[in-house]
Amino acid sequence: MDKHDAGADLHAYVRSQRHEIERQLGEWVRVPGVLGDPAYIRDLLRSANWLAGALRELGFPVVEVHPTGESHAVYAEWCAVPGAPTVLVYSHHDVRAVKPDNWEQTAPFEPVVREGRLYGRGSSDAKGQVLAHLWGLRTHLQQRSLTFGTQNPDALSPNAGKSQTIPHSPAPAINLKFLIEGEEEGGSPNLAKLLEEQAERFQADVVLFSDTLLWREDHPALCVSLRGMMSAKLEVFGPERDVHSGAVSGNAPNPVFELSRLLAQLHDEDGRIAIPGFYDDVEPVREDFRQALADLPYSDEDWLLRSESGAITGEEGYSVLERLWLRPAVEVTSIIAGDPIGVPRSAVPAVASADLSFRTVPGQRMEKVAELLGQWVDANISGAFQHALVPDIETAQDAYRTPDHPAVAALERAMARGFSAGTVGRMGNAGGGPAELLARILDAPVLFFGTGLVEDHWHDSDESVRLDVLMNGAVTLASFWDELATMQRTKDDDDGHLTT
Image (cartoon, rainbow, N blue to C red):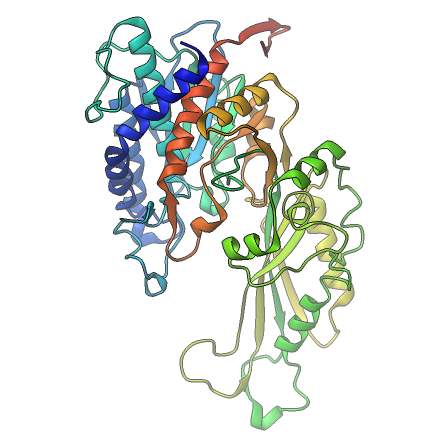
């Protein structure tokens, strides 16, 4: 059977299981594993246990749930092929907080399917991505069962029955380890400790990071870079206490004006971040990558429709996609002062605060970014105000770029098969994540594959996942395991390398 026929069989099998995929994802979405809210701590454990049960049902001989801070990480291992490549799959099962009154399609944790999308918090970020892995592996195992004659020969047919534990199936063709954490939405504060304490156990030839977006449903692109991320809180202090504006208006130091003035100065007239030295360490980008971004199908109209961002702004001299994936950025994610809720008191507030989110690119380091930000605020704030700046270095994450590696081409071929595409583009990821941490501690290259789209509304109301994309993702992953199985693992001075 050639790869084209095998790909068609994989697609047929996955689509025959669509209702079961919907059922499983809906069942997991109903578990409200919200990070950061004490009311949901038990649900974070329930979410981890749901995943652990699904992994055991799939056949993993080792499945463990590890406490990490207020949440739990799930680790699973299936390593039965000595000498075959070992892959560590990373993702997360915790979800963002919700504002139920803003949801229109359904309540956040009452999943529904409409027009090919399953709505519910976590459906795309990132429970759907993890479920694509479960079904990718199940499809891979079904294919191997058929090949080795241990399963009904109709197992990969469109009329195959409901999913169940695969009897007497062979092991995966490669060695697989899953690490699905429960604190990603809080910056993964305990992931480094978990990795360092059990670094040898988590060792792999390749890390597959599945918490990213695709470019478009009809034009897949392989993600090869991830921006870094650092949050910071800036507080500006004016009067010693909230003071009635009718008593002091005109001579009291209003911290809202000063905070607004500082924020307005963060960018120069060309849209560049105006902090001196901020760009000094930005590494040059390969021209072939810039050209790959230019080759993606893009129009302003399509981007504005899918992103719902209203208008296009940003740094002059760079395209929208270059601004998203190749250039640093800073955003203000919240401002609080005065009486944002309740009956207004007509008072000059004592304090105004803003939450900042910095996105960095390879070459920049968070400690230096924090230092430069502090120097800039000190130099620019008026002497009439006190201030406090607190960068969150503990959860900051440096940027990462996938190195040249044989597995990159293998993943590209798998995506072409999974999405029935003639070509697979290249892209980056505008958000952050612990890719650099994983690569550094495990000393392994990190590849990226996710099933999200910008129109999935991550972190927003009416989050959803396109089920066709999720199923194409499962076929991609089944094909990727087949591709990696053709590679050999060599040893050279105790460092593992994959070769074709």
